[in-house]
Image (cartoon, rainbow, N blue to C red; front, side, top):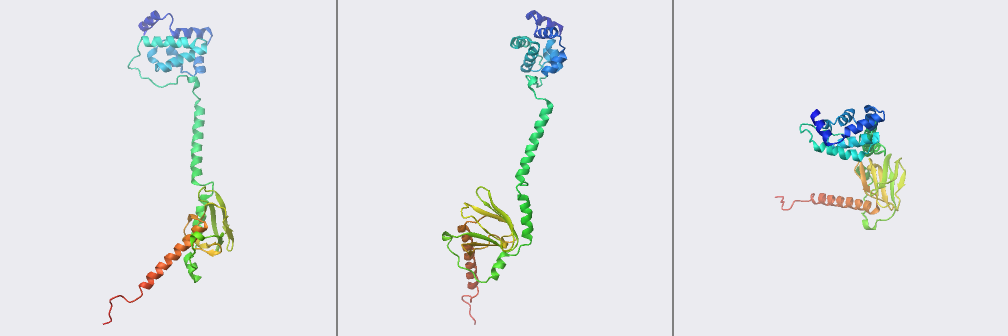
Amino acid sequence: MPDEDVEDEQLFETLVGTKLSEAREAKGMELDEIAKSTRIPLRQLQNIENADYDALPAPTYAVGFVKAYAREVGLDQNALARQFREEISYRPRSEAHTEYFEPTDPARVPPRGLAWIAAAIAIVLVVGYLIWRSGVFDGSMSDRARLAAEGGSAESAEAAGSVGGTTEAAPDPASATGPVVLEAEDTVWLRVYDMESGDRIFESELAPGDTYTVPADAAAPAIRTGRADALRVTVGGRRVAPIGPPQTIISDVSLLPRDLVGRRAASANDGDERSAADSGGGGARPGFSGE
């Protein structure tokens, strides 16, 4: 584009590209040195020096290249940036030219290696978070395996209770007082925790005959186990109904006295209703005649 360069030279005393090229040569620097120090592609520096505006990216990025180049050779970057904007606005860019993204100041772009390291760290953080959520480190996965193993060998708690014979009268849940004691009738693993905060209060495997007393000051104690039938639960020395079915993993079962006694009362009421239904069905049918 010789004709266009002549027009530019007539309008501007000295083109920006020429000023930069002369300053670079005066410092005894090669163009590829400028490219390395500014991290601007060599072809773009050549386009600036040759005033090949159509080969440059969008004006915003091209002006950024000029400013970085000017700083490197010791020229006034702001003055050259203003003149360069005038040069490119004086002659419109080719409409057929496709713009592509390049950073305004490539010197501030992080190295590719640093970008890969940042991506690797992000992946590690995501994987770590997923593992943490899965419960591998807090023991919940091993809890599930242990609960499943215990549940497979559990015996029916209701059958064990029926062997005892008599059923005590259900007390009023509102008046439930006394310590809550868990007694193991068989080997059983259990965890007692605060249902609101999730904080662990107690966790262990109890042997037959071992007991654990729930702290009286626990605000919302709850239990997780796979062998509810292997536990004898008492409130103030009085046995309550089983806290869960056999061969089933239970959790979030309240160990507050009033809740445990309430479970016992509900079980007793259910038993009374079933007994009444059975006795009612055994009599003579109304209206039946022997004739």
